[in-house]
Image (cartoon, rainbow, N blue to C red; front, side, top):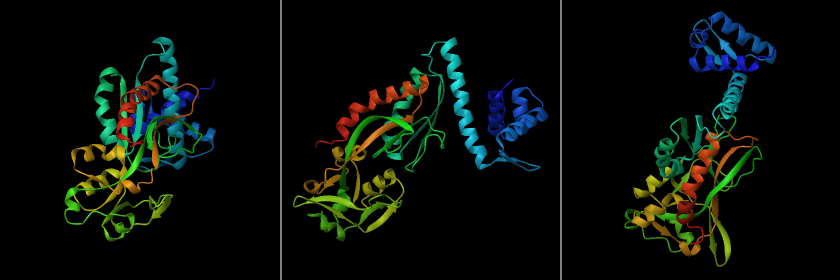
Length: 306
């Protein structure tokens, strides 16, 4: 009889516990039985899942990919059983969430207390990073990302849009006169990102024409939240999403510069998830919750229409 799901469970527990003996104890099996099941799986797949030594085991590249798929399949099996035994509306299980650092800190983390109060059976694994991620490869159920979407492997719901703004702190402007035209930025300390992007220039509209201005970065960083903090400290001029600095501008901690030359470019803010026929309740519920809570806020703070 085909028992691949059982073999997947054993393999996953070996990964999660870090060894055959620990997995065997958890599963009430003998270490030799666990080892044989893993070896049988490797033989069937024709690949080595673990690199074994006398003291430890580590996943191979194939093992990491197989583990990501196993955890998703095992969770789908659990969801399928819950849909029959407890009703499809049962919301529980592990939810893996990823968001950019600025969006996560300012918008997503403040929502988690309320979500957990409503759905206490959902376990949340949240990661904040500005690096590009792939849902299946990085074992992510839901991600929130800015910018255009070009991948048909996932679905998306739009949370809002946000225009980009050039900003500086009053403390910086007290020492350096505010730029009056975009070309003045060549004489200012500008802040930029240190990762490669499709267009590493700042766009402006000058005399009705779109101009892309290359700025000489006095400091660089790998994420928007650090750039915001550097700007607040008066270390230079940056270009950030309005959703990110809206509150700072309202408080007077940051000042929008060159608004009359703003190119009007916006970036979409989307919540993305795997393109699958049946979306588990924990994922569907979290998406609905985030859209309900954040879409109205982003409509205001994205300030797309000015």
